[in-house]
Image (cartoon, rainbow, N blue to C red; front, top):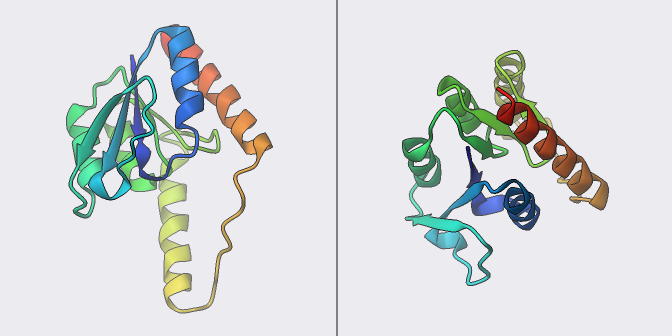
Length: 148
């Protein structure tokens, strides 16, 4: 098992690396050149160009059935599930065959409302509680996946 991170906008990379070290799991962080940083963690960094979906495409090319992906991108999560791998959001939401269709549909619908200026979302702050919920869900997912 490896943990692959859609790293361009992931606020929990450090927590993932700490948990992965505990379980002796390799971590790969995928990011674009637009999000390059010298702040390196104990992980393998894969940097791709800034083309649309370049990070997602590279991540999927390196994905195996045993992997666990951290992403907030529902489209990428759907692809991950198609490979029989696991996916989790930065909020600790585990993506499954049962919830992905609903999430994709809702995301599409809300996007239409935003384009029509009928709905404006406000990004909520990533709180300590959200960070803890993510860590608990990630540990549970790792342990469940390890027992399969």
